[in-house]
Image 1 (cartoon, rainbow, N blue to C red):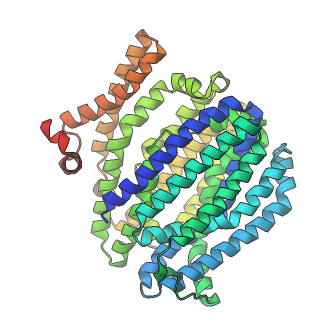
Image 2 (cartoon, helix red, strand yellow):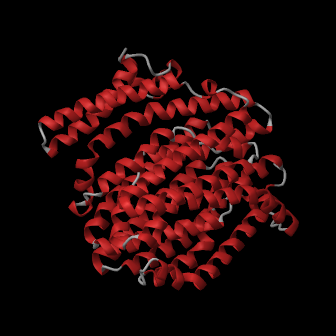
Length: 485
C-alpha cells in the first residue's frame, strides 16, 4: 500500500473521529456546569498524561526493532508487549496510591473516584500503543482505521447517554474504561499470527528494548509533560472554572492536528526503512514533500478559522466560554509551525539523546513561562507560554534533524513557498473577514468561512505557487478537476 493510501485511511478514520468529537464537545460544554466540565477534562488529561509517560516510547522502538530483525517478529512483539503491559500495571498501582494527593493539589476532591477508574484503564491504554504499531508495520492500516472509528464513536455515544440520562461524570469514566478494555481485546485479536506465534518471551530481549527505548522514552516523557504543563499549572494555580475556560480554548482546529498525526504515523516507518538503507537524500526529499503538502492543505484553513474565532468559539461552546476564543487563537498559532514532524528523523536515526536534551530544556522553559505569565494573564498567559516554548522546541529539534540529514534548510523545505502560501491565505481570509465586519450576520459565516478557505486554494493554484507534482497528484486522484485548467 502506498504512503498516500496509508495516510488517506488514517486521515479518513480520524476525520470521522474528530467529527464525532466536534459534536460532543459543545454538548458537554452546554450540558455541564463550568466546574463539572473542568473536572471532566482534568481527569481526562491526567489519564492521557499517565498513559503517555508509561508507554516510554516502546511503540516507536518496536518499529525500528522489527526492521532490524524481520525474521523474529514474534520475539520482538512479545518482549515489547510484556514489558509495556508491566509498565501499565506499575502505573496503575502508583496512581491508586497517589490519587488523594493529586486531588488535593488540584483542590478538587471530585477527582478521586475518577482517578481510580483511570488507573485501572492504564495497562490497556499503554498496551494499545504497541498493538497499533504492529498493525501499521503489518500494512493493516485499514483495520486500524476501522477499529479507531468504531470505538471512538462508541465512546462519544456513551458520553451522551451518561450525561443526558444520568447526568453523571463518574458514569462517563465507567463507560470509557469498559470501552478501552474492549478496544484492546479487539485490536489484539486482529494482529497477524506471524507476530503472535509461537509465543516467546525472554527477559534479556525485553531489557534490550527497554534499554533502547529509555533515552527515547525519557524524551517522550518529557514531551508529554511539556504538552501538559500548561494544564497542570492552570489546575494548580487557578480555579477549576478558569481551567475549564482555558481547556476549551485549547481545542484543536478540526482536521489540522488529525492530518499532521496521520502523516506522522505513516512517515516514521518509511523514514526508518530509508535510514536502515542509509538513503539520506531520499529522506530529505520525503521530508520536503510532506512539509509542502502540509502547508498547502492547512494554511488556508488555519488562517480562516483563527480570523473568525472570536465569533465562532462562543457560537460553538456557548457564551460561558467567550474568553476561550482568545486562548484558542494564541494556542493554535503554533499550527503554522507544525507542517513538519520534528522528531521523526532523529527517531529513525536513533538520535534519542538529542530529543531528550532539547525536550528537557524546553520543558523547564515552559514551566518558567507558565509560572511567570499565569498569575498576571491567567489562561492567556498559559496559552502564550505554550506557544513560545513550542516554537523554541521545534526550532532546536529541526536544527538537529538537519545535521542528521546533512542537509541545508532550503533542501528540506522552501521558505519562499511557505511564506507565499501564508500570505495568500491571510489576504483571502482578511477579505472575507472584512465582509463580515460590514455585514455582521452569523448565518453568513456558513458562506464566509468556507469561502475564505476555497478562495485561498484557488489563488494558490492560479498563481502557480503550488508545486506541479502536487497538482498532478491531486488531478490523478480527482479526475473531475482535469476539466479546470
